[in-house]
Image (cartoon, rainbow, N blue to C red; front, side, top):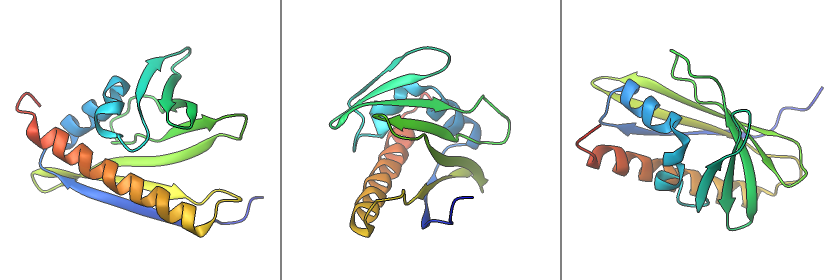
Length: 138
């Protein structure tokens, strides 16, 4: 059994309904619009997998099945490593939403790298908020 690792949950409030936030994020072609800290482009691959082009090379990503609970968990494979599970959720927050991302410090990852990655996630969450709140069609 694996040891418990450091985890950090980051969130952002978005003035859009949970359904609208979920639908936008679930459509992975939008990923490079808001996950700008590392996603240069994204293309569908096979069996629900997508290939994300990053500055460090390709990354494979797969979301959980569409669901009514706001769960957007996804697995990523970077290089030949083990899959990394990222937990994401959209929950109601008054007339809007709270978007949550839980990240886990991977084995061999320094505290500095974990903090750097957390900063990237925070920037991406604020980018998601800006993109969604600026779109009138959503």
